[in-house]
Length: 162
Ligand SMILES: [Zn+2]
Image (tube, rainbow, N blue to C red; front, side, top):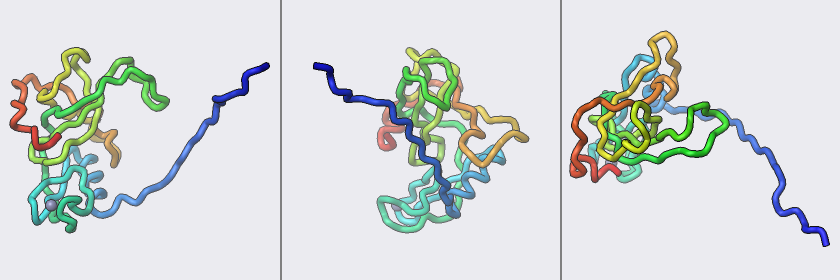
């Protein structure tokens, strides 16, 4: 008896347009200027980058803009070994969460400039910006993060931000 098919190809694509909102719009605009802006919660004082509009812990609208550094600490990461349709990077590569100096929430981005076996939590990294005239209001204005060469941050410095 012939086996019944259990798996079949079903290409699926979802395209949508999302409204950025006020805080996220300012964040995206700041990327075009080569800087990074977040927003501070008026109650717990956490700085969210990118802005989320409201603090998920306190349930209140975030306050004014706060400029944060484009340098930070790698607090977690994954090594990507599977090719993705929209990435032409040689495998393997690292995608990680960077806690920018001055922010309280890690920021996800690509990490380059170090063999994957040397990537570690606590690594100090800096944004590599796309040249000014080529930036767009998107995370693609930062090409990647690269090691700064500074000593690793001690775990105690970022353990509350994993
Ligand atoms: Zn809060």
